[in-house]
Length: 160
Image (cartoon, rainbow, N blue to C red; front, side, top):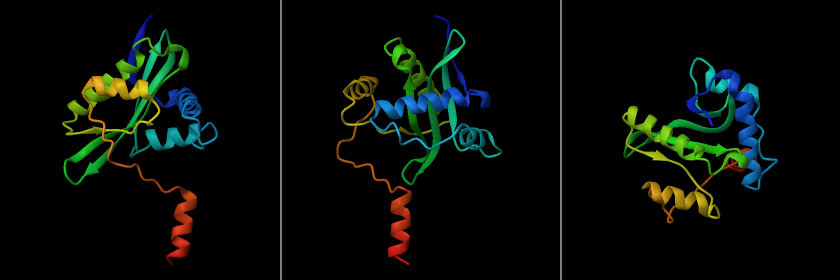
């Protein structure tokens, strides 16, 4: 198995979108993805890219990816957020996920960042165990809070 972990290119975005959709299905949200290849191309490869993607290529085929972007912590300064790390189902257990994870951590270190952060679903015990073994801190006393598009609209309408 000839494996390369590399920076994604614009032409990789169709494969990246396939992986995003596969992750959404795994996370029991198969219809939640509204991002398009064009959005990924425009937002990731424009004048001011909003994210960076690493891909795992096996024998010339993209089999995994990790998408990251910068955040700012009032306590730490610039940090890195790992939005998604996914490996195609048939390639899980081959070390690709670990290789992508290592690449993300090395990238953060090379950028001089003080923290890498991400979220994991509470039922994804395999991932939780992996992250714990890697030395990551898993906080069980914090909640992830989000407001979707509908919530944004309702909030603005009711607080006008």
